[in-house]
Amino acid sequence: MSKLAEIVEVNSVSRISEGTSVVGEINSSNDIRVDGKVKGKLYSEGRIVVGEHASLEGTLICNNLDLWGKVLGDVYVKDLMSLKGTSSITGTLHVRKLQVEIGAELNGTCKMIGEEEFDASLGKLVSQPAEVE
Image (tube, rainbow, N blue to C red; front, side, top):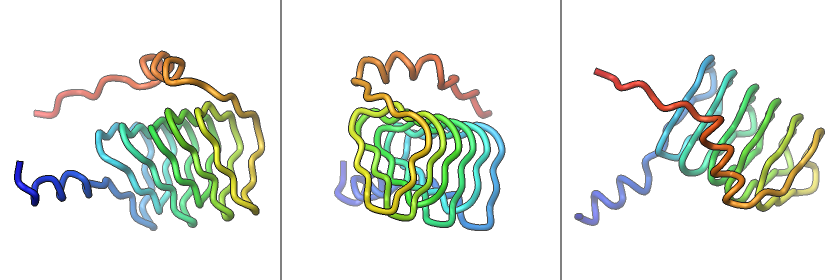
């Protein structure tokens, strides 16, 4: 594989821009950056970054999560969830590692889980994407 191909793959990020609203289910093998609004289920095999002005209502499932904005719902993180100082979350967290900055709001419950428990939950939470023709 060429160096250029490696760089493109590493930097592949699905983006939901500020001013954009999405209702439904999103499954991505790439990282996801949200600066708009999402209502539904958001799944990434990589990292999800929720910007400072973003809001999500529903279920988030990913390997790593950096949260600056607002989330209302259930969150499943296989590795590290980082709550930044401007973040606000109301719901149930299922995480392996949690990092909380001063100023972050966490209203709900937090359960520390291992990779096995995450993988078991994944099969129940994420539906297989339909084939696009």
